Length: 109
Length: 114
Image (cartoon, rainbow over all chains, first blue to last red):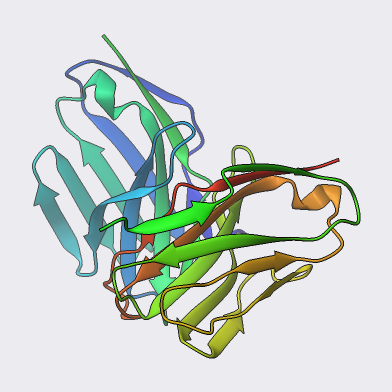
């Protein structure tokens, strides 16, 4: 079993819709969770991190964490074509990051 | 600040050749990382360093070596290149190893081994 699993893509949503990206992890002791956005041919950039159960909002982005279910998600509200990218979930434990394989999102105008 | 820089951007190697991928950061970060990313996949940690003179293996260290003689530089050495090492290599740095810290990535080096 992979340590970090993301919902298989690609995911396509119309402009203005909510995009939902999901991630599960196997190590119950994991402490912090990151969402990186990666445009094609570019390097990853951090968009959200979360370490407490519940929701964390930043603009159009909301990260949700449920440690009991070992589940973290990213919601993108009012999706824009510029949100089209691959989203990588990363779980950090003792300083080492484990990344999922990513979910590719396409937002259609 | 230039952030994290990597050279070269692209490289083609023949099987059995060696090369060094350069990485430098000017943010005075203690922690530096090397990842590889195969097509359609996430990032796999190769090696990381918590400070000058200290390095440790990540998930996929075989076929690679690193050194960290200064805070700024963290080169990755490929010995006896193999086709399985064809990938995009990203270097990253962070201020500390604390679990809540953001990693800053370089632009990547695209390596092809033929």
